[in-house]
Amino acid sequence: MRWIAKDSERKPDPEPIKGTARKAVIAGMIAFAISLVVVIVCYDSIQSPNKVWFPYTAAVGLLLGVFALFRVKDR
Figure 1 (cartoon, one colour):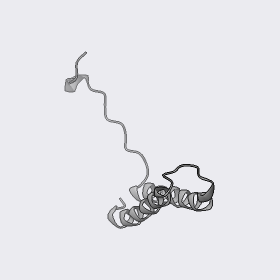
Figure 2 (cartoon, one colour):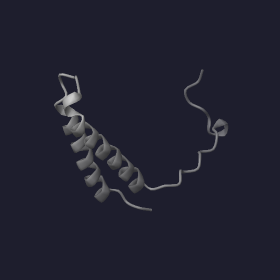
Figure 3 (cartoon, one colour):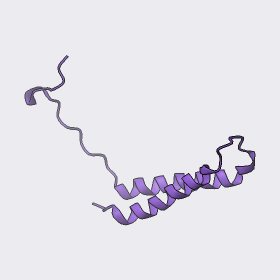
Figure 4 (cartoon, one colour):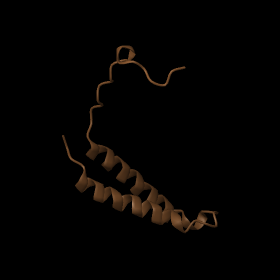
């Protein structure tokens, strides 16, 4: 088994996907917003003794998404 292929043996690179980074960031923000709402609504019924970090994780993910919206560029 070889780890490096010769240029003549390589397959062509796949075409880039159609979409923008902004759409991916928005999808992630939606997922974090939904998880934040679910954690807040179901907080009392969560049985984990370490449940205190669940809402913070979702909130930080949402805030990082807001930051990422300003950093990504549309092409």
